[in-house]
Length: 236
Ligand code: ADP
Ligand code: MG
Image (cartoon, rainbow, N blue to C red; front, side, top):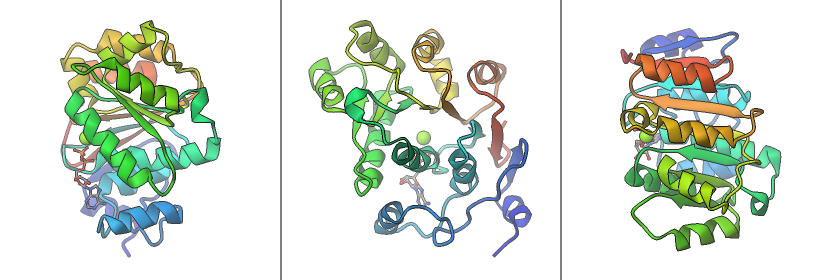
């Protein structure tokens, strides 16, 4: 195989941070739990994508990450697979509230993330709820009440449900802001900040974005602690 430096060069990966672990360039040598490897094998994936290869080992060290990579690079499993392992490590009871929270800008994206979580988390017995606007709250509240390890939500609907006091975020220790740039473009910043105020400060935070403008840098500086920055390609 390639050295970590050669792999990063070949895949245009740039990393910024202290002691960044080498990328996990193959599934067989990844050390991922067998139930997760079984699911990626079922999906027919031959190797981690560059964003996965580099973000998994960082996330598995429980460090904060800001990852800048374009659409279609495999970011979802980049944060979901470490989420599954985090859930296993905590051993939390989902009936006490979710342990992982993924914020997503739209209903469509939130549903895609949930589908991926259900598919790849099946062998790991992960439970998931998906909260988004434009649909009745009843079934979403029912999924929360049943106990969800992971909640995937759009900021508006999650705030509505928080105001109804029908969900608690006090057990969250793994927070993902997916498509952060798009969420800010859509005006979700106040809602994101209200939500994060309800999440314990002692947590791991991962932010994924396709672009890296001033507004995104600012919210990253406010919400992440000493993050490792991973860039794929020439995005900025
Ligand atoms: P992004 O969030 O970066 O836009 P996605 O996470 O939606 O990208 O992934 C894009 C597609 O690639 C999805 O269909 C996903 O199932 C697939 N995919 C993810 N990881 C791999 C992999 N390691 N090998 C092949 N395909 C993958
Ligand atoms: Mg995505």
